[in-house]
Image (cartoon, rainbow, N blue to C red):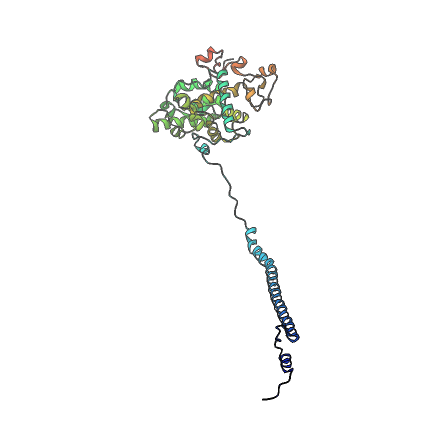
Amino acid sequence: MGEQSPDGGRKTAKATGEAAPSGKPTPAKKALARRAGAASKQASAMQAAAVKKTASAKKAAAAKQAASAKKAAPGKKAASAKKAAPAKKAPAAKKVTVAPKKATARVKGAAARAVVHPPSGESPTALVRRARRINRELAEVYPYAHPELDFANPFQLVVATVLSAQTTDLRVNQTTPALFAKYPTPEDLAAANPEEVEEILRPCGFFRAKTKSVIGLSKALVEDFGGEVPGRLEDLVKLPGVGRKTAFVVLGNAFGRPGITVDTHFQRLVRRWQWTAETDPDKIEAAIGALFPKSDWTDLSHHVIWHGRRICHARKPACGACPIAPLCPAYGEGETDPEKAKKLLKYEKGGFPGQRLNPPQAYLDAGGKPAPPLGAG
């Protein structure tokens, strides 16, 4: 056992750094704590720096990736545009919208209802109303309107209508009395000597062609229809010299079957009134048929043709004496002075004879005068 120094306990405590018996930290312990705190703070700082460095690296990588993608985009866009370019060079054919051929049934089969496209720009309903009002006005002006060819039966009417091509109804009416007196039936005309018929028809003009037509249609009536004029459109148009216009004249006036007669007067007036812009007779027939009920077609034809012959002339219409001037979009094309216009009126409106040698009594009662026979005054 060794000898113990009076201050040995204090030395040992100081050397080992243990707490003094009083419980207060020693200077050595404080220094150690300071070093530990500094180390911990340094470690935290190093860890934060590492985290920050990692975040920066990730951000830089993301930015680099975005830049690469952006750089590649124009190339892809250019490639897409380049690929799509041929389509621009060869565009698909543009689809053309055609109006329904409902009215082009108005073309070759004019009985069908037509699609109305008013050339004046007015609505289809307004066009129908104006057209029908014009017809009503004309019906009051010409209540006695009738076919202006003399005939006693369907055979005489079909022959007279064929002869009326390229000449006046008056000249036909002055010529047919001699023809029908010598050849009263289809059988008689079918067996006629062409030269004798030509001599009778000479005043009508184109007498050789017309002789061939009337003899040919007479033979067809005898051979195919038992000597009777057929009452169907499809049969009539098979006869030599007979077209749709002639067929509708016969159907409407000999058989009472409605039809529109598109002669030169009718064509001129319906375009002048802007009922249609068509120029083909079959298309005109269908376009006008769409504006009126079928029951009006035959009388409508008479009203329009009569007005065209008497007042609304081709070269100088008598606008100043026209009863439908307020409804006419072409008013002013002719003479507008009332007194001068009256001098342009023809037939009974101007105090002159009409086209027929034997007109209906209603025409005579209205003040109309019969035409003179061939060779008279």
